[in-house]
Image 1: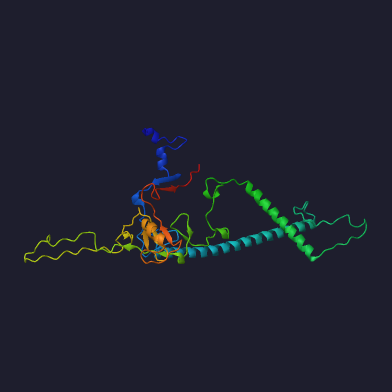
Image 2: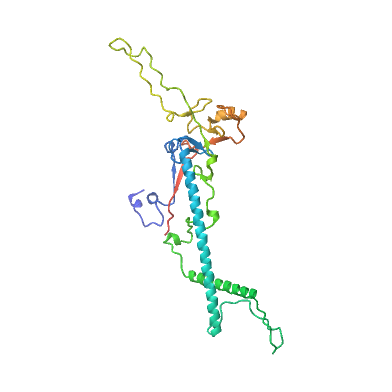
Length: 345
């Protein structure tokens, strides 16, 4: 590619260099191992889960993060319901104002008709008497009751309301959509306040998966990792290799620093295999113990009981913990995308 082609801005299409400079369209990027969340990390705070809990789909959270998120969703649902009730009340008031405007128009048309100022009334009702009844020159009876008054009034108001709506629609036809304003484009979809009760989220959801699924506080499953209780993987120093002091006695062995429980990697309680993003894991719903897939298939599922506490398991009590990925194409999430603002010319 020559230097001139990168600076050529008179072309009808974007060049590769121009496309890379723009935040336009959907951007895709491959994810490596360093971009993946750890298998024991919280899906909300992205740190190692403290007092871990899991949902019914196997998404891992800190207990504090999960409860905080659920309480926030509950408060948001309450605010949406209050806002929807206010919108319904406002819509009812708007309909009442429209009915009052239609009633005023009916009265104005009636007064003009009585004064002879209106040539042709734009509001037509079904209140026309049958002229075939009675002979010519005889006095006709005029039957009129309260129900007839209400019927005629309602028909006149509905006709006036339809006339007002037609006039408003005709006034809007002359106004073209503004393509340079995002809110006035023909394809604009608002994500603002809800317009109906179906738009209000009535159930708290789990934010660890896509698409979200319902989740409540009583359905959170505590997760109990098994850690290696051995002091350290470093072999202790032998006494013979310890240098002697000037007094002739040997110095004490230096104490090896035992890693804390939150720093040690979890292991499978059966095969003692260290768990990682490359390992498929299952959690037992009644007790919360975690085992690898091999031990689950060979020991847990045939006996239908936990291998740590021997609690009986049901058909849906073995839940697979989700992993974000390993960095390889066949190991979970391997690509992410970012959608930019659509170009409008």
